[in-house]
Image (cartoon, rainbow, N blue to C red; front, side, top):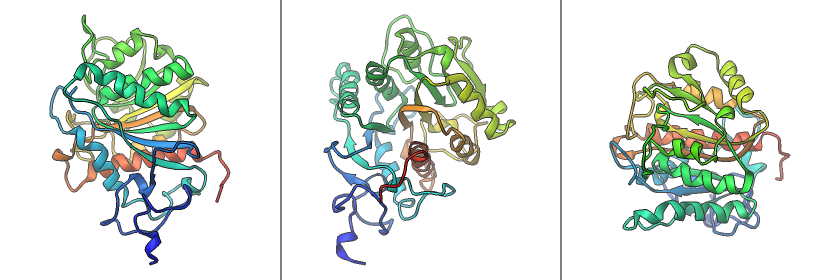
Length: 317
C-alpha cells in the first residue's frame, strides 16, 4: 500500500472517495474523512460536541464523539451496505473536529455550541453532529432555526425530553420542552419514535411508542414520519438509547424494550426525500459499552444519515 494512502484524515488530495486503511491504525477522523476547518469545498461537516455536563444519570458522553470516530474506521473501507452507491462519491464530507467550550463556565456552553453551528451553516454546509449528551441538540436547533425557520423535529429516543420545568435549566431531559416553547420546533409537524418512558404531556408532538414501532413495518413507520413532517425543514436527531440496551448498552439512561439495530436502520433507509437541514447522533457513553457495539451502532446510523443526503445526488468522482 503506498504511503500516501495512510492517514487519509490528513493526507487526501480530494474530499471525495474512500480509501482502504487498517481499522486499527491511523488518525481516527469520522469515516477517515479529511480533518479540516476549511468549509469552502465541503458539502457536509461532521462535528463533535463532547459534552456530558447536562446528564441526569450516568456520565461519559464527552467521550462519545471520539468513540464514534474510532468505530467508524471499521466501516470506512467499503461503500455502506445496502445502498447502491458510495455517498463519498457524491458528497464532499469533512471532519470539522470538535466544538470548543469552557466546562468551567457552564452558563456559556449553550451559546458556544450555537456559535459553532452558526459558523458552519452560515457557510452553506450541512451539519452532522456527534454527541455528547442530548442537550447539545437544543443549541443546534437554535442555530438551524435562525437560518431555516421553524423546524420539524424527527426524534428517535427512549425519552421524550419534553419534561416541563418552571425555570430553564441545562438538562438533557427538558430541552425540547423549551425548543417547543420558543418556537424553534413546530409540534404539529414533529414526531418522536421509540419512546418508552412516561410523560403525561405530548405538547402536541406525535409519538410512536417503542412497542408500536417494533410491531409495525419499517415502511409504515417511515410513512407516518413523512406524513407528519411534510415538506418542512427537518432536523433529525437520534439518541442511541432509542435502541434496546442489548444493542446499545453504552449510554447514560438505558431503557429495556427498545428498537433493534435492524429495525432502526430499516426505518432510516426508508426516510428518503425529506427536507433535511441538520442531523445528529447523541448519548454514546463508552465507559458502559461492550465491545464498542454502541459506538459502532452510532457510527453506522451516522453513515446512514449521509446516505439519505446523498441518494438524490450525482457522483462527482
